[in-house]
Image 1: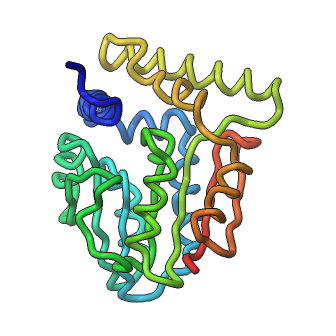
Image 2: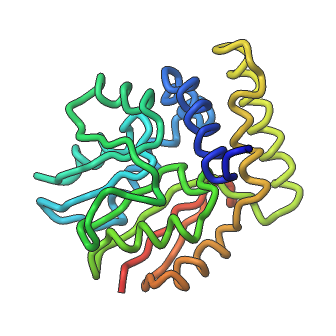
Length: 231
């Protein structure tokens, strides 16, 4: 008997991100021509974090987002969570960041623990987006924030075709050059085909119980940063 869809998707995610872990940060910079770090810094500023804040970096990967947070917020406690042990191995080698291998749908934390939850390029990869947002909402304290940075499909149809073509071409190039597998990094445009729009994601956050929801678009809607406050 085949495993349930959720378990099968989780296993495939673990295998794929395990394979790309050694080159993940380099490819992220290459895809964005170095703009990725500026976007993450803007997300940290938007969170308006206070000294000593308790922060969750969900789908932390190699810990790049966490490092920016730690440098920006005095005495912050940052926990990184990812489904891929190989990604977390890279994070451990680069710093003393505290990391946990866990499923976003079953976070091993009590309710209302974190002052802010960051998700960098992770939400579109989860098989059940509403359930993931519910779990994020659960572990965030009332008045705490959720900040997400992710890829989206641009609203303009012409730019959408150009953008998807760019992502596919870049993914195929780096996949072949680094791994001999052209389709390895094309998961980004593939995942966008079933993801929500920037506007729809804002609506979903409000439905999940977030107030002061807002968004900022980069690359003409190809990248979106969202934030909201738990009521």
